[in-house]
Image (cartoon, rainbow, N blue to C red; front, side, top):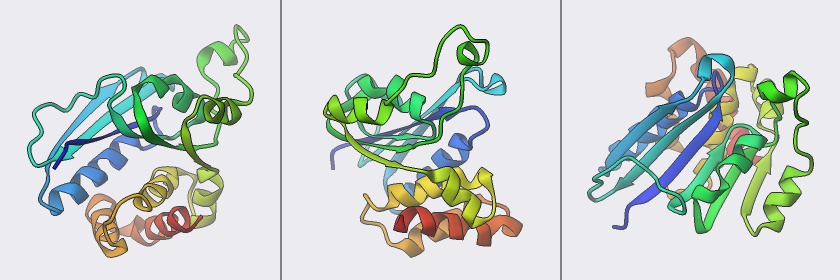
Length: 190
């Protein structure tokens, strides 16, 4: 089997690391060799956080180079735009449409780029954009954006819903399990 690669990108505090661990657990459960690499940015200050997840029969490195990601899963719209050069030709980008202002926008030094969804599509990117924040709030917590996006990602895998739900059960505290299961289903069905 050819090695597959997913980049999970977002802003510190959005749950990208939990998402990568959940995905890694799911893939390991299917018997794949899996490598996960967490690249921490200025996460404590709302900076970019990137995680690489690679799997296949045998994976030698967790690093994804430019033009190699089969999927980019983005937790924030500007982060989606920031990492497009890592998407391989024919790859897919799944993004939350939420906009979180980076420090230059907060200080007034720059404006948040407009029409990013349109620009990404115009660049030929296979874009699947959804308002994951609204769905997470419907599930019971704005912090469940990561699980909503896992639900959306699940549509592009041949794993059963039960396999995904089991990986969620192994990854989140029991008191939050039901809410995360709702978030997953909302993302999957959106």
